[in-house]
Image (cartoon, rainbow, N blue to C red):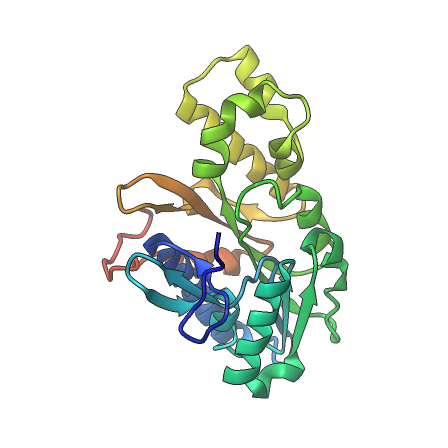
Length: 276
């Protein structure tokens, strides 16, 4: 399969309209976070992108191009950026786009090639204490063991925006996960308590997925995070099929407050009532 290229001749991420919705919420959070925390944490804010990609997305059907998460993050005033990318061509494309579009920020960026699960310990912020936001956007559940989340958050103040693949990643493979002792889901979750729960109390398919999501958030809570089921933002296809949730977690109530604010207006400009 030929590599998908953008109008600048560099590789792009094959995307759908739903990716724009996902990035809409990410951009709103980074905006309110960087502005709201700048005075208290001046010079000590940082951003982490574990699956940065090439920096540009393309919807093949419409030929529409839009910035990916790294270039979105660079719009905001962080003192340090950490971009991880394992694919060599995507890594080179991201570097090229940063150098051509935002060269003035190069000294504040750590571009880290390779598997983020192996390289996550390279996140070293020069000043302490510091405060960060991490966008965790794997293409499925298998690239992200929970052990990586532990390493990322250990002894750090860092908010998490996680692409939780309940739709494509879990629902479509639930039978396989249920009947295998060790698998990608167990590694992603960091536990398999849900198996015992549904074995002793059989529940519906949808309820099983909710049990799995709740267990993941419980595991985040064990790391000191505030994570609430009501804060999940569903991202769906044009046909209203669930692809994944954006799951948010923070170690401080202020982060949750920011997340509530960014969720009040959806990508189409529709205002939601608080609590819905």
